[in-house]
Amino acid sequence: MSMPKVKFDIERLQSAGLGVFFRPSQINELGITYHQLQGLVSKGAVERVNRGLYRLASVEPTEHDTLAAVCARVPKSVICLLSALSVHEIGTRLPHEVWIAIPHKARPPRLPQFRTRLIRFSGAAWTYGVSDTTFDGVPARITSSARTIVDCFRFEHMIGRETAIEALQDGLQQKKVTTGALLRTLEKLPSRRLSAALDIGII
Image 1: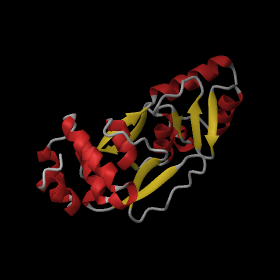
Image 2: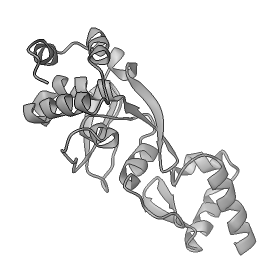
Image 3: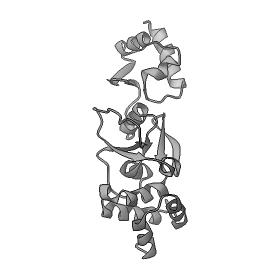
C-alpha cells in the first residue's frame, strides 16, 4: 500500500465521524476492505487494539481513551454510574472500571482487555435521561447528571451509600443538577432511598 493511498484511507476514516476507535464493519461501509485495513496496520497508520477493535495510531490518548474504546466496541451501551459521575465531574470517587449499561436481554460483550462493570437497563431506564455524546470522536451515550445521581441510589448496593450521598450533595452544590430535575427523574425511575434523602434535607 503506497503512502498516498494510506493518507487517503486515513483521511476517509477521520472524515467519517467514527472517532479514534472503530470496528472493521464500520470501515466496510466506507469502501475500505479488510485487506486494506491490514495494510494500514502494517504501515503503522492504524493499531489493532484487540479482536474487532482498531485505533488511529496518530492520535494521542486522552483521559477518555478507555471510554472511547469501550463505546466503540459496544456501540449500543450507555456510560453510567461511576463512569458517568467522573465524566460529569461529580463527587470524588474515581472509577477503576468502565461502567456501562446494556439492554436487559442483550448478550454480554466480551472485553478482555478492559475492566468493565456491566449493568442492565430496560424500559424507561434504557431511554430516560440518556443523551448522545462523543469520547475522542467516538459516538457514545451517557446518563445525564440527574439520571446518574438517581441511579447511584437505585444501585446503592453496588456503589455504596457514601458515594450516593456524596454525588447528591456535590451535584446540587455545584449546580450540576436541581432538585426539580431529580424529582422529575424519580417520577420515571423511583428510588425510595433518594426520596427519603431529599425529604430529610440531607443536602
